[in-house]
Image (cartoon, rainbow, N blue to C red; front, side, top):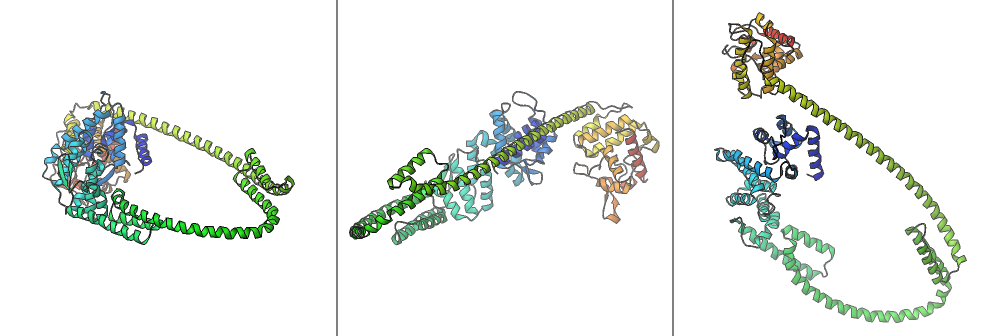
Length: 610
């Protein structure tokens, strides 16, 4: 990915979400792969900089980052950043005085603790994932230890494990920056991966420089083997190149451009480096050059004799032509001056003083008078002056248009910057207001009837949605002051507004807006108060369009994967009864059609302005 693209993506993320989100992205760039669980732990553990200043990162930053252009989904709840994006964010993290190198070490310690249990998992995929995260943590703080562990893993691979070689090469490439001091390890991994992909030529190119030291490569005290067959192939390729070079220079010397290009292609085909073939070429070409120079000397001697004979012949011809040349000299001199003048005005116009003096000297050397050259100069200079004036006018017009475009672009950029700043201020104000409202809503749990909602809050905060659903019915019965195990029409009609708002706000807050009576009310109104359609929208019915059945309580989805408005329902006392005969979550176990009661509850929600 080009650096300018990386910069644009990070800047766009910063402008859209603000500085706190950017700080969170810095920290999220450290792990090689991301999961929602890992990101929430990062969010919870790194809410302050190294000076103790609060970063004020909202929990929504997790979802915003995963859904942004900085992350790519590579599997179920598994995300990655492009290597270039990761490196850019980590460089910014190190350069920030609030974080620096110390924060890298803190992130490394955190990641090592996070994957410690996963390294002992019975699931091989989980162990592999945890091992890569461990290497990531070590690469930035203990690169020697990371290199040794990677080398140990490579040493245990067999040549036929092709997919694993390719995977390891991909992993090691992501550590190119922190493991820059271990270039042989990087080269070895790339070469073996090329061999696994079947690209023997590229493997030879990569590993030929390592093969000079023998059939093993030492990294952090571990020996990595280079296949003996590959070493033999490298030696064989060197011999093949030497044989081809001898055959070529025997047929032709010096080598022309075409032959040199063909040799270069053959070298690349064999996977040989320039320094490899240089040692082969030098003795062969040096000997050939000696032979060539001797042959060239002999040819020059023969040519010298031939030229002496030719000179004598030309001298005789010049004496015969001397009379004719004298007559044509004047006309030839006029043409030469005309050509020189044309060449001068093509190279420069108007002519400066230096060029005019040079033309004057040339005129004098030709023995021409001023009146002889005046007619030549007038015709040429008059035409050139017309062209020059036209070109000068066009340049002035072009410069005027360019300046107008530059000014227009400057004004446009200024307007865009002002608008972006205004929107950013507005977003910050709105976010502050939202956080203030959320804090006010969750600081206390008001009740007109003195009902304690702490248990309901704790169940929702823990994500125990089924227990929280049953607790919702219990606190609603307490708030209604009824001894029945359900809420009748009268009780629903006069249900305390304060308590209804408290219950709804708790569901809204801890489900992140997914569940709640107010959510169900909006859905109910959006379908024209049609209870069957409402049941379809919130996921209480199943089956084909004309044969849909209502779910039983145990068939409900008690998780955040449920549709909007799926909860709360209000308990499970009716056993296996269909939701069609549910007392709206408030008439449990009664075989009474619940549409009217649910509609009455939504009416109360509207009356209480929940």
